Image (cartoon, rainbow, N blue to C red; front, side, top):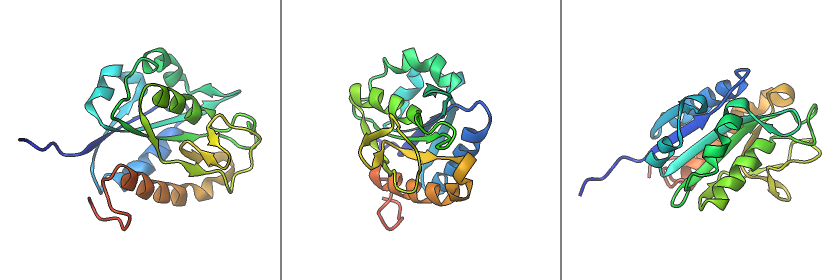
Length: 183
């Protein structure tokens, strides 16, 4: 019996480059641990999702809780993906001051589809330390469905948050131990 190496599919969309920047920071930390394949969501179809049991999704939230434009274009196909037997982590970029009533809503929009279609969400992130009014990403009080990044107002916290979140999701994917060793 052939044992396949564990690999992750990371799918992201970026209009202004901020989500792409955050993606690069995440990749720098994950690449050291496991194989990861990265896709710009504007260049894929739903079949690419079938190749992975571990998925990371990245996006920004625009204006009044809208998905990033490439995710918006792909959303009808996304809603048809079967996420059974898949573990999914999501990170999102938003502006908690300028759009505090819709902060990182994209995380929650994608996350609910994943759950509704049989997937297991991992990578929950505490809301403590953020100043926002409301978020679809807050699935239970005090917790986002994924990592919330605010480069506009808390850019100095981005790298530390990513470092902690990557260790967390790698452990939740069962790809490393809590001490950081490869599982």
